[in-house]
Length: 65
Image (cartoon, rainbow, N blue to C red; front, side, top):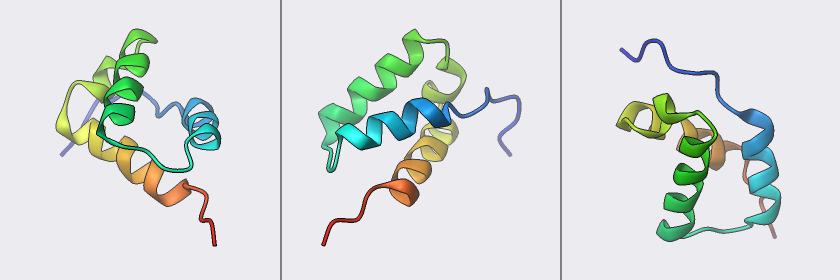
């Protein structure tokens, strides 16, 4: 069970999604680095936290026809 994780930076992730219709592994790593530098290492530095971020991105990505 994942405990004591920081609150998900929803605004930041939504803003990131607006500028990333698609993304690759390098984009993902850059996002994790940016979030870590902004104090979200509790999420970015463990697989469970990364999974939460990834699920948010996939669930909220803009679906283009």
